[in-house]
Length: 467
Image 1 (cartoon, helix red, strand yellow):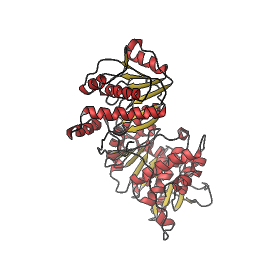
Image 2 (cartoon, helix red, strand yellow; image 1 turned 60 degrees about the horizontal axis):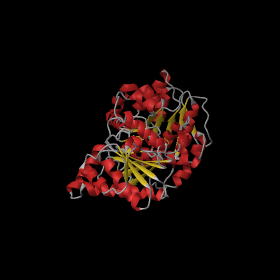
Image 3 (cartoon, helix red, strand yellow; image 1 turned 120 degrees about the horizontal axis):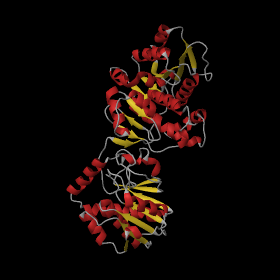
Image 4 (tube, one colour; image 1 turned 90 degrees about the vertical axis):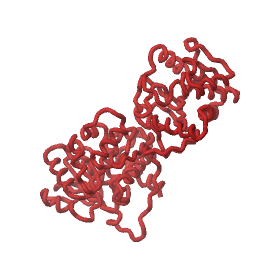
């Protein structure tokens, strides 16, 4: 099985393979490792399934010949459909060792199991014409579909679709996981994801989010050492209340909501601190015991909301910016944040990201890296394929979690969770990772069709798994 700690781009994967080759391991040996490993995964999942392996002209096609031969030796009924003759020496060698049948591409009939070894990592052009027509015909005629490394038609580093791609049942990553395994829209089409180790050990600045290790409070801790989260409320009170409740359930020692008169607390233990005017609010938020200020959930986008945001940013305290705060900052906001001496965390979804980032084009990873560098902030670029980036360039991708998180209020909950973890850890990047993992895990524990309140109720259960 693969170590999910490091995720390699197409270029990084080529460099890692070249390093193995330079150390004396042949391309043929690497192909053997990849193909036999993938065949073992396929056979264990469906040992008696008649199989058609589609082989392209490159090394991914060579992997296909090795897979087919390994399956044949295990007693599987297997055929190969090749789109063209192999172009690399290793693929030619793999074909020479194949002892079964190679079908004419246009005349091939579907089999129960479809194994895609057409292109894999590094594809930059779409599958088109008769190749695409036959690919889709054979895909549609199968009952079980497997992609080797990546489904054909997916761009490795971005997760973009170069041509229409259908849903696979299983994707087998070879040597290392790639960004497309975790980036939308590709990640939603992969089915189950399993890795095959071929000896690659290259490091990468891109990693996969893993379950954090969280320490419980020490015996001498109290509410202020565990951290005071200050939530600045705007004209939509519900969002601020969700953020505050989530912060409380994520182990903040103390949570306060700062609001104008008439704002009610969501429970008996979250304090609502009313203020008379902006000077009074500035004085209250300057309390040295406050560990982080959260502003944005339910803030609004009028002039008063803008004044509240300016006030919060002018106080040199850690701040988490979400929702309306990001829209109010706009495309010039990143430069403003760069000058802050206290840590800043941003949690935009796609629309909010577009409002605060002037960059266009590139992968979600690249765009988030640019915003983190430009703003000097930790950026949690939310979505079904969330990306977390630190200002120093470290990147964390998030594995698929519950699709039921696609509900109003779940982002407000995440903001409170990350803020609470910051008050405990005093590390913005670590807090973002912990909050994101707990958010996804709480969603899984909550089951189907949950509300933000139900999601919040499951945070302590997720937290317990990290102790």
